[in-house]
Image 1: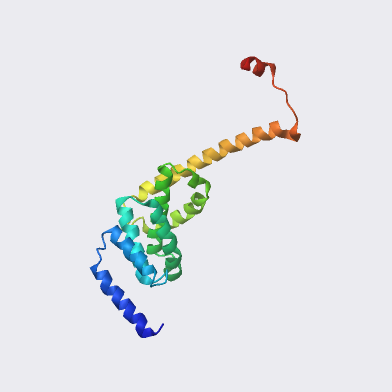
Image 2: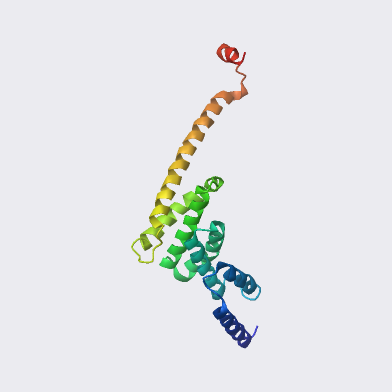
Length: 189
C-alpha cells in the first residue's frame, strides 16, 4: 500500500476515534473489531484501544478473561518497545490480578496450568517498579496477598498429592495382590 494511502487511512481512523466514547467498553470493543480488518494486529491505534479496555475492565473488576487476552497481546509488544518499563509492569499487574480473580471465582484448573509459577517472579519485578507510583492500582497489595495465598494453597495441595502418590506406589509395588485385612472385611460386612 502506498504511503499516501496509509496516511489517509490513519487520518480517517483518527477522526473516527474522536467520535468514540473512550469510557465505554462496548464502543471500544466494536471499534477494535472493525479496525482489526484494516490494521495489523499490533498497530499502535489498536494497542491504544486495548490499553484503554484493560484499564476500563480493571476499574470495573469485570471480564477478567478479556483482560488476560488483551494483556497477552500488549505485553510482548510493550516489552520489545520499552523493555521493563512501568507500562509493562502495569500490564503484568493487570494480567496477574485478573488471573487471581479468575482463580478466586472458582477456576482452580488455572492453578494447574503453570501460570502461577510463571507469574510470581514477573509480579515481583513489576511490583518493585510500581509499588510507590502514584498511579499504582489500588488493588496492588490485595493482588500480592492473594497471589501469596494461592501459592501457599497450591504448595499445600501438591504436598497432599505427593503423599497420595507415595501411598499408591507402596500398594502398587510389582502389581502384587494384597488381600484385604480381616479388619476391613468386618467393616464391609
